[in-house]
Image 1 (spheres, rainbow, N blue to C red):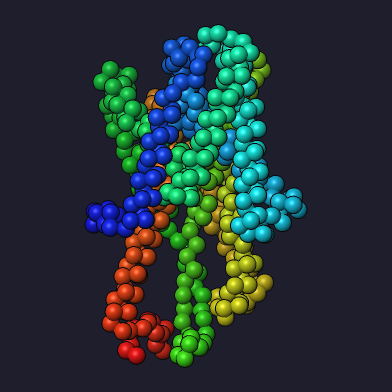
Image 2 (image 1 turned 90 degrees about the vertical axis):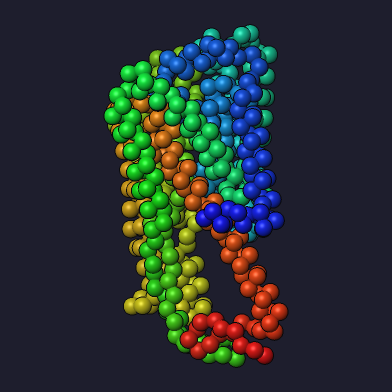
Length: 446
């Protein structure tokens, strides 16, 4: 691992992408500390201090601490995620969007444009209600139309900027841009929460044994996530004898790896965003009925756990259906002469994949639900709500999942580099890669 980190500098493109990503993440973190004009920051922070462990903590987590400062990036990337959810749900049911999806890259660009427009519209709506809510809470220095217009423009611009940063990281950096922004926001808050937890132990508000249980639980959660995320179901695929160039390959068996958690970190991110979206308005409302409704979705309540678990299950099945098409895979296997032992090619193979995916997704959804809810409930019971938000299952799953995906992408560059070096050596030695009868590659002289 250390050797690979040292070798990053030897791959110019990879080095450039990593530096570009770090630079944009640094700019994002700087923006978190730029406050929106007209806000009474001291009064806002006192409100946060009085409402520790409430819904505001979850909103603040996904904004990377921007809500506590009420920075220009307060809305974060949540509007973009919410609109992305809506677009993915509408695509299968709206013929126009479905046709655009089939058009490949050109259609994807048009859908992305619609998503951007929807993000701006949603951000405008959210920022207006938040501005009105802040005025009702008495957190604005000079209430009025001027503040409302300033807040709406500022917050919407911040969301547009984060959306642009995420797209730039995805295109020119390393990893998925949106996930990297959420990842950076969570990681940036970890040192602060660790120090505050230790301080609580010193002051006697939390027992030292409880702190030990908190850290042990976080470590065990990481181990469990890494173990499951690296687990695969190997589907055997047999290929008959066939001609490759002038050589005949023997029949061989390959394996198609299907992850147990194929949806990755998408379900908890989408579920959290869907819960946060309506409650962002409710948290600043003075209406007692809305406040009462919000109380049912606070962390630790059975209603929150039930809603969150249902959303995770729905998004798990939905996202797996989006990224994996059993009929398409079955057709590709049939065209290439491959087949699954004891399963007929064509529709029976597609039905086999449907059945297998349903079982894997069910276990994957159950795993995500347990990881997201159980550690958080334990940390809440130990009296550490801030620790539960930053080191709870949802946050740790996102951090570990993004880390593993990014590491895999970096590993791809190393594999490509080794392959290029191998081919250069082969050309220098006047050799050519050929396939022998056993299907394994070897070098023979021309």
